[in-house]
Amino acid sequence: MSKTLVDLRFIAAQCFYAALAILAGFTLSGDIRIATWVFLGGIALKTWLVVLKRRQE
Image (cartoon, rainbow, N blue to C red; front, top):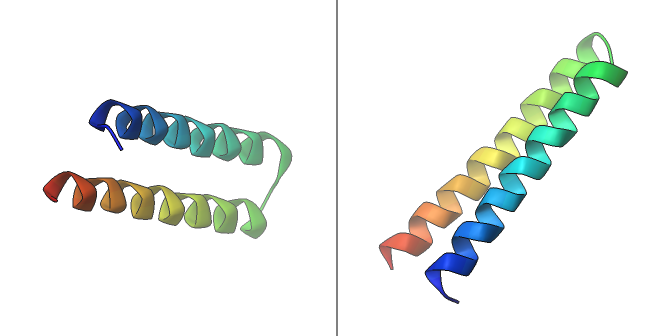
């Protein structure tokens, strides 16, 4: 897979995670909102680590 395609997919994924976090902020409240943000942050971090690992190869 070309580097440009990986970069575009990474940017799209991060934008999608950010959009979901914003929607969660407006629609949820309390502990479920915080849990959703932690979950989405974990997925975003894992995605970033996978991209970094692929760039090392």
